[in-house]
Length: 306
Image 1 (cartoon, rainbow, N blue to C red):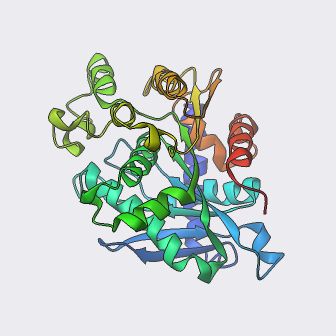
Image 2 (cartoon, rainbow, N blue to C red):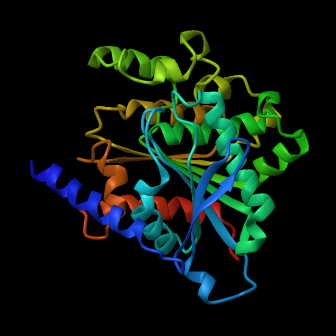
């Protein structure tokens, strides 16, 4: 009960914060992409220090089992992330099921990256210095989007040269408690008895697409040249996570390491699936400094000094 009361407090805090103007910290509701989705842009503290310096970009992709979530829920997290990383943070909405399927979601994340490349100069954003951060299904979408762009997948309907530019701009990916093997996760859902209420199976358009939408499966099919262009990954997972078992991140890291792709794994004791993201919303929360410490360490590896 105390835990839910704590979450209720955060709920009212983000609701109250998002209702305010906050124009010095955030530009809300910027339309982007082919489906008219919107994103929020949270300014880096560095914006006040210089009118000419280009600022690195963190794109945060929220989770929600491919069927729920909205950008406003993560306003407190984005504010703290902008402060902790001294970066500008972009938080886009995407077409969760049933509004869209996983391909649509990947298209939406790609469109938000395109928005940064085409409009970032208006906000002093460094379009060539982007780090993707995602939680749960959002971590899956970050990895999958990067792989689709790297492979110049035609179903993104983006010119191949632009896909290459976007791939080169992604300097790293940080996954918080992510799903990386869809069939493996489907089997886990069955052990929990939630496979029929979960949106995952439906969002993937059926079991026949599980492999195509699994980052692990796509990575195994990359050639040597493509493997060399895979962005480095930082994987963060709590040991008390029963929603997405830590083996998901462990096995991805083992696969990447076996293929000489840079990957770092942080297994954080006593942290569950929600705490790894919710505790980033306020400095006073129990695991705030633990999780942000890992994120900052990876971010500093990815982003070149300005």
